Length: 419
Image 1 (cartoon, rainbow, N blue to C red):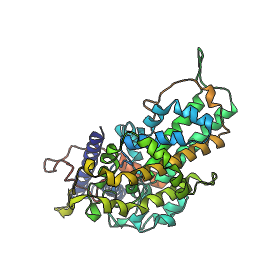
Image 2: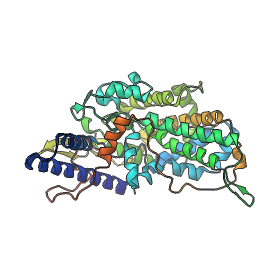
Image 3: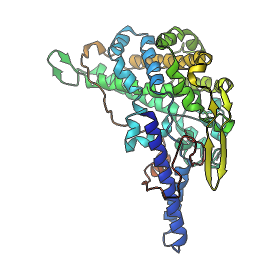
Image 4: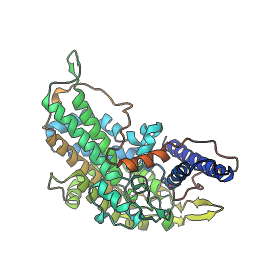
């Protein structure tokens, strides 16, 4: 499934770039029939499409599931823990939903840029990033994007917004939790089963939040070199987050839970009042600091190649040893990274529950399952940035020209390496 989503994403991206190039050629040869404003808008859409990163997965399905399942066991409030344990399969499902169902629907494409945050693309260290997204937009707009060698015109699209996405779901969960605490069940009573829609919304938002916390625990979601192409490690992203994770032993959840004290100390999670964005920033700093450890362990047999040819970027992934042969070297680091995500998520869930007034979750006896929960757009991006991002994300696709080579794991065309 994951490979199918990735292939579809690459195809859509290539189709949009090809179409926009075709539109620009038509404008050049038509004698200037289109007015200046239309030309500028079309160029903006083309530029944003060519800057666009591909879908990024913080972990594969198993990795996100491990982070969220372990987080349930690390929740401090016993009432909340019991409640979440009865919904563990739904929680782990929600922790994967932004990478599965949301990626399969058109409106979900605008969420691609909420899975990562990479301030090094404008040479700003993570520790210097402000906690306010509007302050970040003011800082980053117009700065040189190192990957594209053009000024930044869409902060959310080019740098991402992972920290603030996690905060958004925390806020939505608290909002629903406060409603649940203040009123009687808002849903129907079915025999002996009471369904509370506000409590349902609260734990669904908590589960969705888990995905983005997990993303931030994956080091390659904190850097412009997100797939190792700039350092000879091309293809490392999927190798680390999926292929190696799939080799972890069955007791991986227990390993994460037992490792929690170390992560609590690293993240300095003694103050429950620290904002979610600040906690995400602290996690991002730790993740980013481990990039060189992963590169050092990468069992490369032959470095990747990245070259330009006839306006296209040609890639050949690095050749490396099979994951089952090297998992012992990576196991400790993988567990450490997922433990940080699980610990921060558990503490955030406790925080949400406290801020909500500790709603009586034990009274909700329903087993409603969020099979296809509607996509939720980001609510923290400025109106101007949102318009430019949406313009590129919704540009209609066209059939690729016969001269366009089909995408493959080894060869793609893009202005920056694909995620």
